[in-house]
Length: 465
View 1 (cartoon, rainbow, N blue to C red):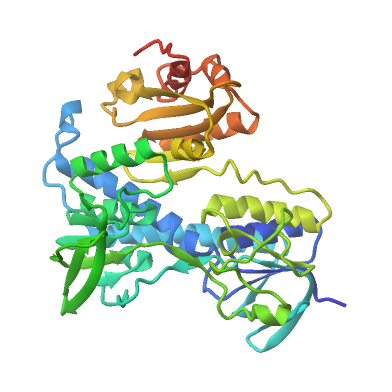
View 2: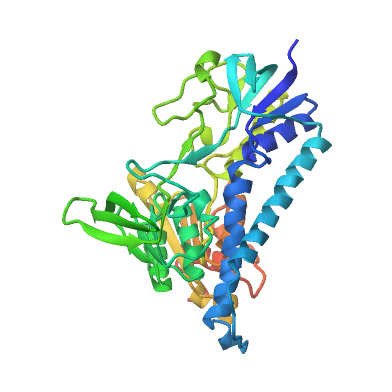
């Protein structure tokens, strides 16, 4: 007889949600996690601490830069207490990770502490002890992709990954971010606001790979205006560290003359890779694809009956909210119900200032598919609330099918983009047209009115532009 109905391996956003949901559905559930706290990368060294520092650094910059004076708020003598800022970040992390431990106890999920490795398709070993289950859910998440030839040492605080960039003991004079994706831009934003000069080195011709072409171009313009030095179509060919200084050798991606960049801190943020090492997948009859991912069916079951996988170890965007939705769905499938995740509508958000959010298809996607489409745009410079707040960077871009008018993609640059995109996700989930958006009443004055106006612009008839 199996020890558990379900054993979840990993307690990140996908794993802990799957464990709680499975227990709520009446399944005897355990979750294996080797970390000292639950929550995985997201809560401990990812989403939550980075957002805490983004919020705090934004408040500091507003107070320190004189940006509030136009509102009649004059401050002087503003000082940065980095130690206190870091302490508040740590407090937020502790509150949330402790909350998950409480939810495990409330829902009778057993926390098995340690590293799991498969012994067979029906049992695992954790710290030398065997556990059997009718079903396993692999939810081990992802880790930083290393850059060949570059040694990361977070303890020294010179060449760091995203974890190390959350713990720097002082503000660097010059930080170089290798990688112009979400993580690099967010953490680069934190340290730029606190006083660092920040250079972003990106191999591709634009930052934010995968996002809509207009969003990529216009966000780069905004970041440059903020003080970022962005070097696209550039590759790092050498890194040399002496003491607390690092010299990077860079050259054009297509080849050409090399140049040197000196930095006090280097953040390597070129992506993430699935965590499957040490799981002994072969003993369960499993293998990974050429990207190191575990392939699954629509019910998240792997090629081995009774073994499921969700989140960053499976194909698709590496996003906490995707993993959470999959965690609920996989538990429902195991319990004999039908889990639902619409993988075509997983929103992406960059928590810089302004924020950048996207859902659905980009123009490049549709051009590649040969689709006929219409585009409507509305700038926040014409939105009354944004104008009153002096918060006018960005716009809403809506892409709709030319014949049916069904909305295919929504892309936003705005201080509230991460919140605004939820409206688009819900509407698109129910097959909304741009006309549906346009004829839905939006409160005035709000940033959300820009979505209504962008929808009206799809037909070429916005009111305030």
